[in-house]
Length: 295
Image 1: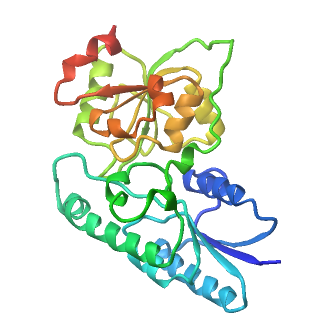
Image 2 (image 1 turned 180 degrees about the vertical axis):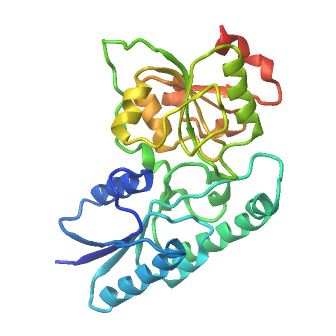
């Protein structure tokens, strides 16, 4: 019987990455996997641990184990795909695209450098003859000319998703819930302007996650998954960042019938059977759906 050893940078059942990792391990349907993960965090640990994990995988590979590298797998991270043992199972792979105007060095890198790194990583995966499993469909335009469709699985995050139908409807007391992340590719000034518009219309806005500057909104800090779900039951709309529509938080919104306001530039990510949960917003032509949101 084959032995399997995995490195997982986050196997926490609270974090989004950890939940996705657990779902991926379950999907492999292997009887026994020995999972190695970081024990402590320290300065620069997030940059050191991936390579420590690769060393562990090589140690067990040389003992005849099949190896698995799980999560924190951005497609731009070429060294991981290059240095892992042959036939390593990777997943789920993530990535992002730049849909807004360039604003600084990081957005410049995302727009010009990342696509080159994506292509290099894909060629490495192709040479290793691996099936490539992506968390979402956001990188479809980068993959279609490199790897055959038969060797790609996208939208892993939607695998076995169950849409909840409840007869009992909760009273919605919050107009907008925002999972705020202080990240250069998630929230932009146009998101802040829309939140301000809700507040100026005397709408009830709650924000959790990273601290935000909106004095009239109710900031509720960092929440467990259970507490997030309790607030979602009471919310009408949520606001999606510009990095990825198919996030775990947005799936939680769908589960609780919360409509998701998103940047229309990411419309290609919306899968047909979930379309009714998404409200496209053109931040350059704001008046298109404002009446629907603020009436």
